[in-house]
Amino acid sequence: MKIEKLNELKDIPAGVAFDGYVWMSDKKKPEVLKGEPFYFFDIEQNPFVIEALLYDAGNGVSYHVKHTGEYHIYKYDFKNLENAAEMDTVSYLPHCLEGVAKCKFKRLWVPEEDPYCEGMEVLTMKALIFCGFEYNKNDA
Image 1 (tube, rainbow, N blue to C red):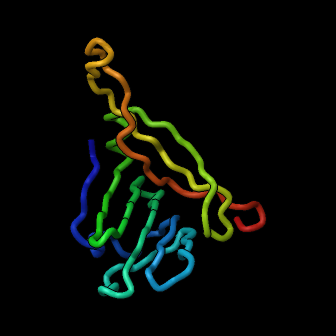
Image 2: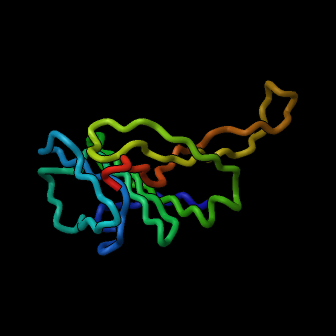
Image 3: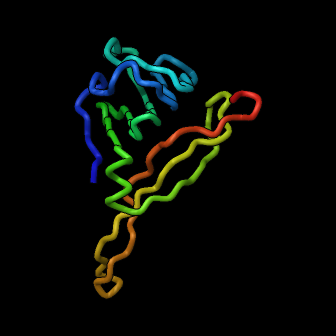
């Protein structure tokens, strides 16, 4: 399975057309990206990225950034994940994302042996991975 933990924000490639958002610590709302690049190399200690969900549709890669005293940065490569596990798509209503009707995610299900099911394998959700937006009709 190809879930990669990145060490720094600058490990996220520059110049990529992302769908998603970046929420900075000095902003009331996140910055929504619609096929736009975002450059992380010039971000210092303050302001910092509270959270970012970025989807690179061209390469089938999703990035998830969360700051909880330190950065937690994950890269999900869909090309490798789809062969290793089962996935389905779900949509959720957004919060504070202007022009966005729904946030789309893929749930990653991995078979694991379950001692409470006579040792048979059951699907366990391992990740909820951002994969883009559905836009409001007048904002698309």
